[in-house]
Amino acid sequence: MEYSAKNAYQHQFHRNLVCVVYPGIVKNPDRMIETLGGIREISNTFGQEKRRLELRFRPECIYSKPAFGDGRPATGLLLKVVVQRRKSQPDYRAVSSVQIAGCVRRIFNFDSLCDFQQLPAFRMPASGKVECVYSDIVPKGVNTKSPLEKPTTIPFFLPPVCFSRTDSINSFVLREPKTQKISPIESTYRRRRQKYGIYHPFTLTEPVPETANAQAQHMLTSKIISPDDVEKVRAAFKARPIWTKNALVNINRLVINSQTLGLILPSVAFYYVNGPWRGTWVRYGYDPRKHFEARVYQLLDFRVRSIGSLHECIKIKRLSLTKINYRTAEPTAAVKEDEQNFINCTFDEDTIPPYRVIFYQYCDIHLKKIQEMLKKVPSPKSGTVCDERNGWLRTGSTISVAT
Image (cartoon, rainbow, N blue to C red):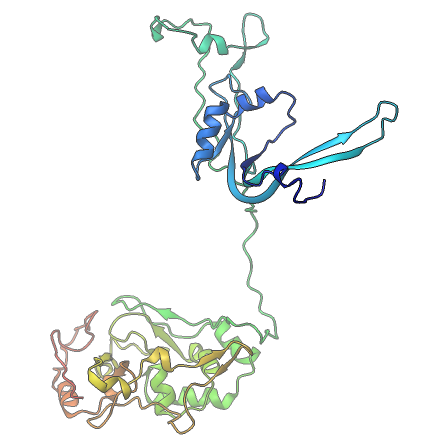
């Protein structure tokens, strides 16, 4: 029956219905409602948005494990279709009317796994047959007997509350661990690349790395890194054993791509993740804990407060870095052409820090007070080790930098 103004009253769009996809063939509707807990339990479930619908295949057994149905929003219609049939023609079918009984706004699907079922059935020693002892275990009516007066012929039946930890399907498959394969030609279209760097924690007992990983050396050949770029970085570490990445590029005026430099550094130096020289690259074999002159390479966390119009000349680092053009997926430089290509990594009296938060090594701070403080640090006695937090500097040393 088509929709028209004359028969619009027959379509009950105002009725909001709930659909339950029952996991079985329903022959007795009353039995089906009983397995769902009855009309009252179904109504309580429908009245709560996040409650799950329980289905017990053996509702008369207290040990029955339920299957849970999850309710989800849905958009559907319940149709009442009247089909005409003829006894003389068994294959004859004709739809005489179609009526909308209501709108389905919610649907319950039993997609989760049902817990394992354990029946109270045992092989009786007297008869040798498997018998159900549910009526003997579960008392009927008021039980006035003591639980200690249990007959010896009835076995104990204490199943757990649940057998399976979860009722969702786990797609985890056990397999052997993957082995690293180094191909002669690495793909150049990957965003993330393994650089095989040694990220060394600062301790007073653990020795420093002496040589680089074999994979780091292999990356120089597989990525086709220019030998001139590698020699420039090696020469910088021969002249100065400890560098920050920013100072290495800007002080030596290295025209090297950041990605290329990230492949060269692990083959030349290791990285300190904490301690007085945190955030610096140290030449392999050089132990700053044994060299008193390494105090000048310690790191200073320099921060400038945003006061008044100071934010106009000092930028925030995360806002001045390279931006990504999302249409072409290529990086575009945010620095103007008339600006300097190399950021000043040294500090003196006439210097304005390029960022509000920047890290300086003490040797790059060209202030008279700082250099005099470094010279006044007393030489350690024989057998003295550096401090785990302050390095070779004295505890409580204060540094004031005029800006």
